[in-house]
Structures are given as structure tokens and as C-alpha cells.
Length: 156
Image (tube, rainbow, N blue to C red):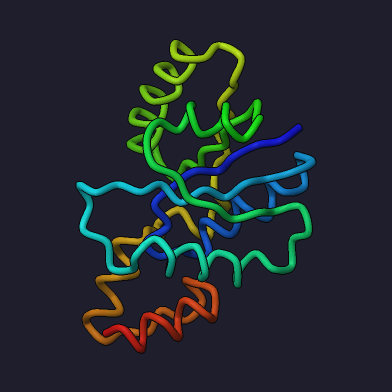
């Protein structure tokens, strides 16, 4: 089965990587898809996020990194993916993700959504928090892949 794991990944964190590593074991092919959201002010442009993800995922033979505009379900259909994987940290994530999953099911009932809880060590972690820490000069070591840490240091 082919699956997509969509997100903004601005930047990719070790929490995202936890989901990617575990999801890659469950499917034949996993497409990690950077969603282009023009309403969000991103620290890294789409190409930078794709490149950082490619570096972080290079050890996973069945993982491909891509980007897309528009509806997640349309992208999944275009990719021939029957599964959308969404990572959850807390109940607040679930409410939002459930709404999206139900709408996606309405748009295409052939595509399923699977929720994966992040490992306990990453429950608190978000891209927003990582960016804020970096901007304030705090270490993000252990929170993001090494390439992301270096890029954050360079950026701020």
C-alpha cells in the first residue's frame, strides 16, 4: 500500500521523524508531502523544507519527499495513495485532524486516514516551538534532525 504523510514541516522535527520512521515500516511506499499553505508565514520556503526532509529521510528506502498545493485528498488520489497518515500529539490535535479526516472521507471514500500517536518523548514538540527556541538563542539539539539544527542556526 502507498501512503502519504502531509504537513507543513516548517521545520521537520524529531516528532515528525518518529511518525515517518514508524509509518515507513507499515506501508510499501510513503510519500512525505510538504503542503504549500500561502496563509502561513513560513521560516523556510517549500524547496528548503523538501530538501531538509530528503536529508532526514535518506536512510529510508521506501520514503519519497514531495510537495503539493490544494486538497490533501486530491494529492493522495494523484499519487495513487489509499492512505493518509496524520500524527497526533494531544486531544487538541485530534479534534482538528478528525474534522479534516471526515471531510477527506466525504471527498473520496476510497482514501482512508490513519492517526498515529507520536512517541511520549515528543508529545510537547512542535515546529512553532522549535522556531521560537531557535530565534531566542536556545539549543534545539535533540529536537530536530542535525541538518535542520544547522539550518536553523544559520537562519537565525
